[in-house]
Length: 148
Image (cartoon, rainbow, N blue to C red; front, side):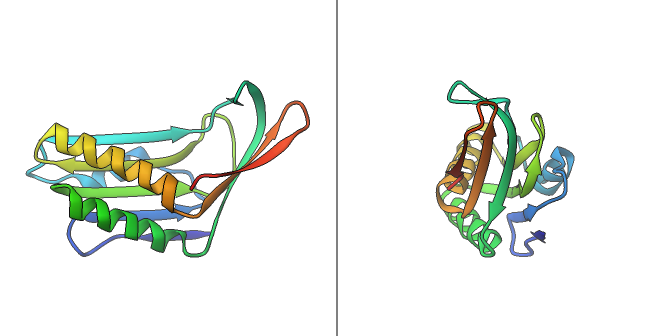
């Protein structure tokens, strides 16, 4: 499952919900701009525990509209922040500890603007984009967690 698109509408440069491994370089390249004095990047990785429980397996599932919803989130960030570039990609499928689960970036003329936009992008992605995490624990338990 891969739902990638590159925006041709200005600052939204890359949107992806994909099973393939994520690339930090791809995201950084997408937001590069001659006027960018600052680029902020957030990388979410799969960790080996959650709430003091050992995680043995993790998978992400996305609603078919996830990429659409991600674009809507990015549209709002672009409208509220003076950014030059935005990019966001999220993995789906089975992941291992250490794998990249999500990579987002924002570029702007100044670092404060890039940091604020990047923070808003990851926070709103987690709050509004229909992607769910299924965790299996070493103790035999499992749980579904709304990434949104």
